[in-house]
Picture: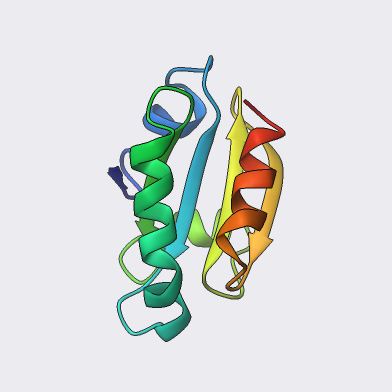
Length: 106
């Protein structure tokens, strides 16, 4: 899993390995739902490591990127493909829902 921030977001997510989709978890430390979904994100990063890249961006520490993508609620999960948003999930959803979303884009 890649730790994302305002400085590395463009290079990692938008200009990085464009052959693989990139799942970005927008979160923060004080967010209880973010802690609930964190194990799902970690499992996806492990189980799908050859098919998708996964990163986390702390919205409190990287406000500019959060503003750029209109993050108003956390957790927000955005799937990027070739630098473009292809899917978005807001809030806690079942693990299987996340897998279905990811598999649509790999």
